[in-house]
Image 1 (tube, rainbow, N blue to C red):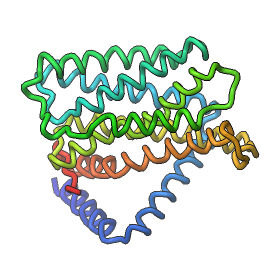
Image 2: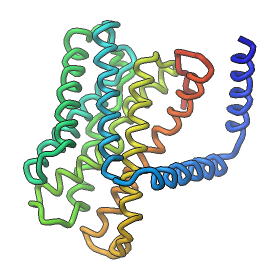
Image 3: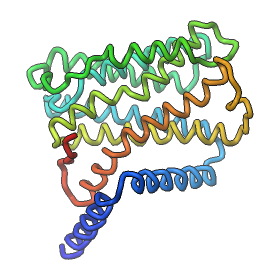
Image 4: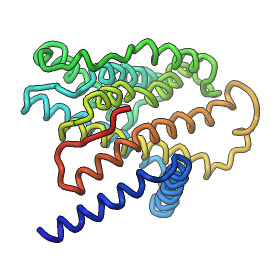
Length: 274
């Protein structure tokens, strides 16, 4: 017991030290940690495609955590219906692109995730609606969908795919980068997150890290000079990297508080109000 209290005290001291650092120093530390993690992955992972599969697999596991919560706890308190509906939209768009790109393990994982997400949405809208905190889930989806659609029309892959498929794929990438925002805003309003919802969001954070690592390492290995050229298609890869990095940093703050709570032995995750 003394050892656990000592570890918790050391963690709290370290946490307080980090919180006192300036924003610039925090960003520098986060970038250093990201670069170190990417270097480690580059050394141990021979096929970068496995990182993309790992990203989709962890995302699917996160959704299964929600299925377990809704089935056993009979409550959807703390969950954002907006994020779940945006997730279903992204998965449906990606699956529709498989007709042009081809079916593979990614499609199988997306279909499994879409079916699970659809079930979560059904339960939240019908069976468990009385436990849904609708007054806290106030982020309008159109504020997220419309900018992503415009970006997809302007900047999309420069490939042999039909134009509609390229736009759909780009929309899915941009939308995936910000679909977690309604969930994060909802948690910031409540400040206290129960274990299953916290584990789901943490899984999203891990999934996005693997996704960002896949794209960054793939571009690094390819050494493609066209990243710095002009043109609609040439802007695509930089925009993918920006999208993946943005979502990783959006979730990094919550992942920090989640790990801090778990190490401290707390089941309830507390995040500061913004």
